[in-house]
Amino acid sequence: MKFEIVTIFPDFFRGPLDYGIVRRAHEAKLIEISVHDLREFTTDKHRTVDDRPFGGGEGMVLKPEPLFKCVESLGVAPRDRRLRQTVPESVILLSPQGELFTQSVAQGLARLARIILICGRYEGVDERVAEALADREISIGDYVLSGGELGGAVIVDAVTRLLPGALGNERSAQQESFTAAQKIAGGGPDSTCASGGLLDYPHYTRPAMFRGMAAPEVLIGGNHEQIRRWRRRKALEKTLRYRPDLLAREGLSEEDRKLLAEIELTKSTSF
Ligand code: 9D3
Image 1 (spheres, rainbow, N blue to C red):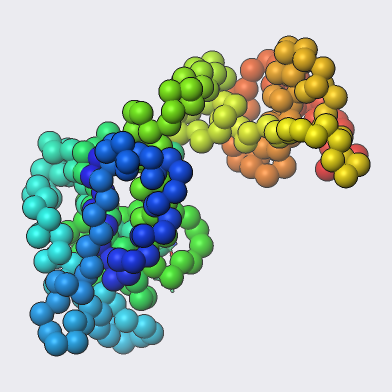
Image 2 (cartoon, rainbow, N blue to C red; image 1 turned 135 degrees about the vertical axis):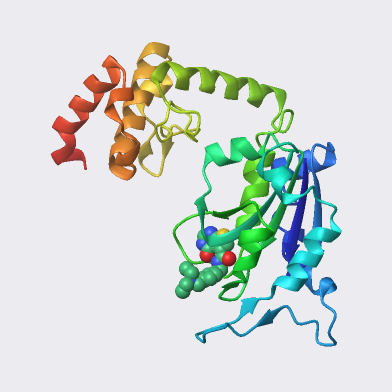
């Protein structure tokens, strides 16, 4: 997978992509990352990338010319071919106005060979970039960032993890069993969660007693059926508390519905 990042802050990407799985994927040549400095595609003395908005208003807008020149210099396939998906490449504008980045979007992107990420800055980007240069606009969430760079780094991370061979053999095998469990539990393919479309269960490690806080007895006992049930119950509890939107009950098993009924009965005392 080739990632090409268009930004006015090229140095930003030296940091976050140089660790862990993304770093190893790069070393293993599973990914290649090129960062392009937008200012190198300006022609004026001051290397101007932004201008005041037509119609007035706050802030500055990224000009279209340097962005078009930069992306065109990369030799991307024509936009209509990209949109018809006859070529495995995509040009993405990171913007607060975009579709929400989810695990399912990441899975779609992981099938491509090349992704161009345009990072916006200032108050916005000239709309002709969204209309005629980028294939789609993506936002990483409903909060205001200072620019698209963190969003670009998020996409590189999430997509890289999905590439075959990016996780160790051990972990990819584990991932497969999670996927199987999700199918049985009826969780969608865009679930990020370990246990079938729910939030993950709590994890503990040694010591068994830490500052007066005991790790749950059931995990130390070694009864695997009890452990599985306890984890499922805790995953349901966490999900009910923090992400009730994920609890589409029609997707829950008989056991889940029983555990949820128990949880809801004890709710007043434990929540
Ligand atoms: C007042 C209108 N604002 C839009 C919500 C202006 C504005 C704020 C922040 C325009 C651009 C930005 C910079 N943000 C991004 O470029 C961005 C972003 C984000 O702010 N949130 C989530 N995902 C993304 S991806 C790019």
